[in-house]
Image 1: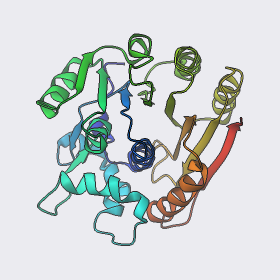
Image 2 (image 1 turned 45 degrees about the vertical axis):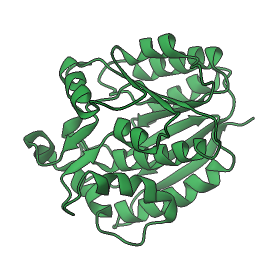
Image 3 (image 1 turned 90 degrees about the horizontal axis):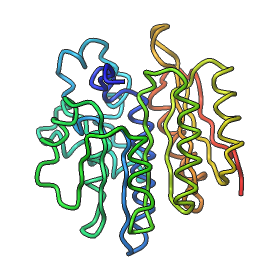
Length: 279
């Protein structure tokens, strides 16, 4: 687990997919005046330098955020996400990419609260530097799955959990299904967003089966698939959203359709929006 460093992949199409949806979920929470809590189980460093040698090794951002940089035809729903990226690059040149903690901090209001957990000591130290002075933001050097047990339910009783595992250990899909079941038992009204890579068909069928038998209801499945430039590059990813906001399925379909066209100019792949588990 500690070997994974997201900087190699920062700003790629999976980040764009994940963070575009994350900002829409946070925007939905902001429709009500009552405060919310955001729990990020795998917070990372918070900000990524795309000129760093690690990011330059595979240059995955070129098929991700770079395809959106400078475009003026994005739907209004994507503006909070794209504005956050622009804010990190005030000179107009794409260099820094905000991770989920910075995106959440940008959308949080004065009464909202962030709880960020990260287990890699080096990444945690950088996260502390990036978010130094941030109000109502608690950082913990802690395994994210332990964070689910320690910090749920939140005092606010409203909020979002982003479970964004690095998938660098065996049986991660099984861990996720168990964690969601246990977290939901403690906080059944919470909003959960679970990111995952698309892997071999048997593994995906097993994961979906495991999630279906958790007993958790209202699980929306969102996926995007692109053509891989090289065989070793991930070609798709998804997000399961538990307790999504009203009509979020329709909103997500429009956002993902635009993103797919922007990120897959060759027309390969596609999107998927359906209910893994309905009401």
